[in-house]
Every structure is written in structure tokens, then in C-alpha cells.
Length: 120
Image 1: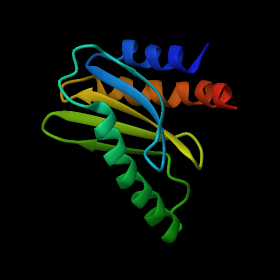
Image 2: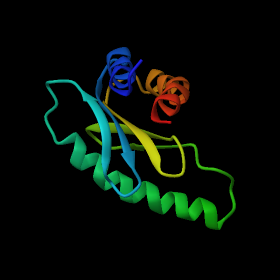
Image 3: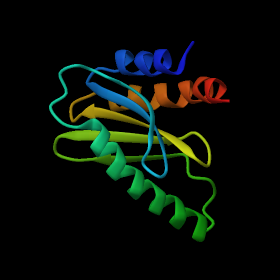
């Protein structure tokens, strides 16, 4: 299964999903799957959140709290779940506020291994 197919499986499998994007910590998108009816720029959102995630990762390293695995951010319009793939990449799942957050987290967790296999 290709990276794009895995991303499409995640987006299609979660009610309220708007996009799934693999990003580098420097904000460069690697690949993306998105629904057609998204009202805002999901790539811009992901680039901005990449900066936030990089700072959180640095803080986790400084306090020696273990390896960062997942971060979520909820706003009045969206929920974003970001899951670390390796030291360079993460995947972000962008959901509508009323999207199925639990299933999104679950699919990111189980599909992370498949994505890493395809990225190697």
C-alpha cells in the first residue's frame, strides 16, 4: 500500500476528517490526503503546527519526560492530532470540531507502522 493510499484510508475511515498530512518538523509537507470540501488551508495549518510541535518536542527533551508520541490541539473549529513517526517526520490528522477524535487517534496509531515501512 502506498503512502497516499494509507493517508486516504485514515481520512476515509474517520468521520469529520478533513486531511491527513505527513510533515517534516521544518514544515515541509511530504504527502497529503484531503477531502474536497475543506473550507480552509490545511497545509498552512499544518505548517504552523509543525513549529509548535517542534517546540513541544524540545521541551519534552529538556525535561527528560521520555519520547513524545502524540499531541492534540482543539480549537472552536478543528481538532488536530499529531503523531510522531520518527525524529524527522510526523503525521497530522485534521478533523472538524465534531469529528470522531477517538477513531482518528486510533487509526493514526495503528497506521503509523505502515507509514514508516513505506517511508523507508
